[in-house]
Length: 93
Image (cartoon, rainbow, N blue to C red; front, side, top):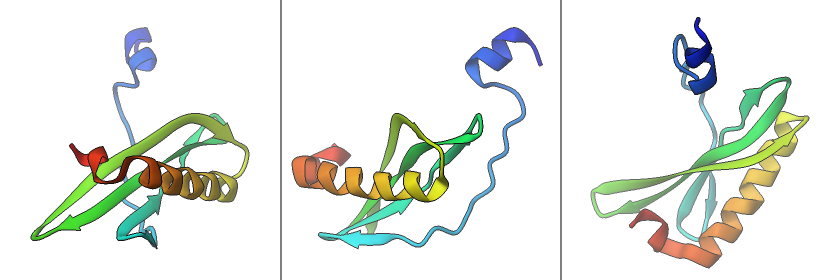
């Protein structure tokens, strides 16, 4: 893999879906999905909400890295709840 591929994260990437149990909060579903990165975990996940027949999704990624997956999941859930309280449905628009 060349320098630019490494720099921009191009090339082979593993994209395996994992079953994540969502947390329901004020009508939203929070899916904590920390990303393993250099022996740590980046805080990431999704916030979803049903609107009629459509499910809208907001991808939630932070710059924070934590040493344990459980801590990254917990932190993501707390940050997502605050984001929901502050932004509401505007996050989808």
